[in-house]
Image (cartoon, rainbow, N blue to C red; front, side):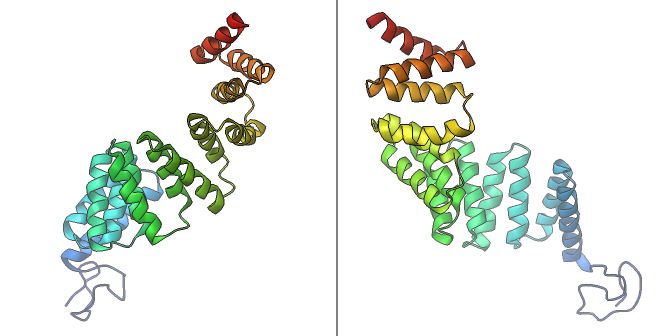
Amino acid sequence: MKCEHCSKVIAEEFSYCPYCGGIQGAVANGELQRRQGHRLRVQGRVKKALAAYKKAAELLPDDAYLYRCLGDMYYLVGQPEEAIEAYKHSLSIEGDSSFTWYDLGVSYYRCGYIKEAIDALERCLEADPDSAMAYYWLGVASYHRGNLPRAKDFYERLLTVHPESKIAHYHLGIVCNALGEYKYALENFKVIEERNPDDAALMYHMGYAYFRLHQMNEAVEKLRSALEINPKHKAAKLLLESYLEGS
């Protein structure tokens, strides 16, 4: 047969032309669209990359990686529901991809499907126990489900796997405050305070922990810091006023 691109004669079983590199046939057109999608994605042209991947997916319905890329583009253009369907299709072909389970979990979370997000993220960890960000999102999702002990456990496991994830200390502190573990909360908040001392929310949460521990001088100091940074922080103002009025 002749190459569809350069017209040189090639063997019938060839998918690629050895002379020009052109791809042959209907599947080839899908491959070309996929390549175009990859190129547009690298260029940051997300909507055009999405269009190319959609065309490729029509011709390559059994390509797990292509559907994962399609899900990524849907997610980036703000269509997480469509991303979910693309990731699910990818996983129906290749069910052991920890990356795809992770992306599915985050997409579920963005859509408000918290239980489904947790299930997907746990599948991610089954495939790859070292997936640090899966622990992070499981902590977030568990907190929103009201399972504070489990959220605490996930943040602690995240810090075991990935100690450099300092923001996990902030979330762990929030959970510990909610559990009444104020000393442990402050240990974690102080890690963040070293890096971000101008965070009004952090100052409030530290002030609250000190308040609950009856360390009033420290509580007042942190609450006043919160209000200096953000004079409109109502929770900090109310807590400070309640103490000053009662003292």
